[in-house]
Image (cartoon, rainbow, N blue to C red):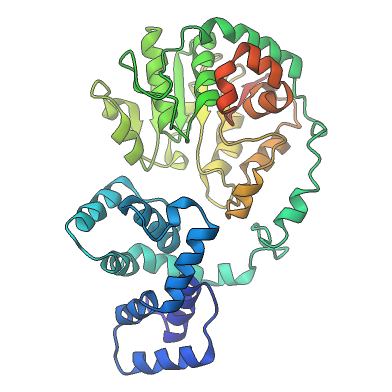
Length: 406
């Protein structure tokens, strides 16, 4: 990607030093670049600067423990991928760079490798594109909130009332919770370790923890689906495989996951990824797969959480859900009561919008709420303590729906 020197320096100052260039500094680096000094030498200059060292020191104080200067290699890679590529490391990439670091390759060379990557070039091209310059975060045309106004807006949310027009079905959720008790008593998962030859375990599993895993286990027990399709796979997949195996169900399972590194790394030796996994975006999957789901079958959705042009969530909401037969059970993940994201997520830049679209969808009467993890934890804490005590460690953030007759 052919950047001008100005664009290159603007981006370096922004991403490495967290500020706009000062005139003197910019002029200095422009002169060096015009003399033919390579861009990676400029980057090393930034990374070796006292200002950058001070910024990292401040980040270590202000931000999570993982950003300390004394980082493990994994913490270093998490931080680099986050700041340079704006994503988590993929399994192969992490393994590759860990090997280099263990061989003594200096950290700045890892940074240079990431900064010279095609992915980084594409990201810079995107950031510099008219689409991004058109409306900055907080602008009324931008879907991204103003970071300086998030707290003010969040404090105005009224969590004491049910969203207008949505049947929460609290009594029915309580009834289902009580029915789940007989399944909870036989849950095979260990609290902090694998047991009974299970793939899944509770403790330390931040991505799919207690409440989520327990309710998924109970839902499979309750409905005993002949077919289960999961869009977005990982630790929830292990719960599904363990539960179906324990119950000796013949459930046909399909995992749709375009980035299956995590899933492949945690499956057991007795699993056959070739028969379980579709390594593609859900938008490219033949819709007949979803049309084949029948009453009591499960569509488990844990995808990008973002509605935008061409996204998986847009496809699911507008193409998949309308095609489902009555009686199909639908799950969405990372949905919190009252259909709002946690403040700390918003402040960290999570501009997900799936929950808002789902809230709007539930105004119509084609869907029934069966169980809403975070709602039950917040509103019926004492009942959860009585009937599902392990879920108090983490309510979970799934919402379970049933497709009704149109």
